[in-house]
Image 1 (cartoon, rainbow, N blue to C red):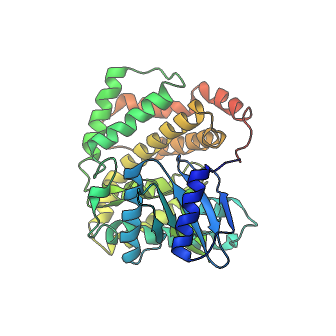
Image 2 (image 1 turned 45 degrees about the horizontal axis):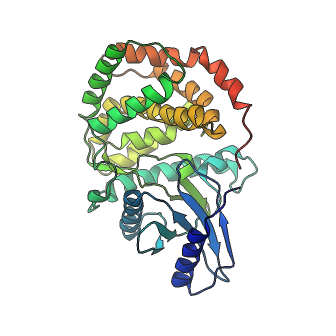
Image 3 (image 1 turned 30 degrees about the horizontal axis):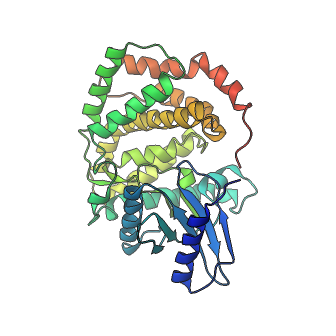
Length: 354
């Protein structure tokens, strides 16, 4: 059960009353997400909002600034209703409780599963608009921790994967050879054009569904970058459970949408997309290692087995342009590493997260 500090609760109530003109009738904490932010639903006699508290001021300012810009551009993101003087608390539009992850996994959920691909296509068709239209005039001084998903950012992700996943499960590798491959790989990826908004965490939990339409949240980590990264985040989301045929169809939908903005995008995607799929998979495994293997969060541990299935598919069907022999060997062998059996056994030891 998540508790809300009384001082934070009082600030939530003050912001709500200031915005709505109503006394809040209920303030209830929402389930913990992949971040350390505190979310709560606040409701009054006629109005409702989601309240957020987080101690990272720069991340808060990024979300508030990006959301305001995107909303003004006509994109389906939450409206920011109110913000505290110190920007540690703010109120945002409430899109309800149903996200894309739930829709994909509950046959009896709020959306007829016969409309599954229709809904996924809507999501993928919105993505280029967020990336291209949202990019225009966006204040990237707000981006945190960097303005661009550049080589430095990529190397952070690869080292996150190395130290929080490979070393934790005790994968053997040649340290210098792996570092050489990291440098070769990131040099290649950094050649891709970085002239779009990179959402950074475009996955099923961050896409809310209201009235059979997608609404997008949690883009505070966004920055300039190559847009194929975001498509990889969605299509190879470990627990989303998309089939290869679905991924192929959605990739084609995305390419058609991107081509409307610039006919050069299909060729760019063909060259660079496999590499961005790979780096996104490694970033996600780093997160699963840190939050699951180290912090013992069951939900993140449960993401590791499907991530291994995805990784095996990627290494079987994709080829990367640069030569990265040590890294490629590790990625090909990882799904069959002996530690995977232990991870599977460990999942059952932890209670379900509330």
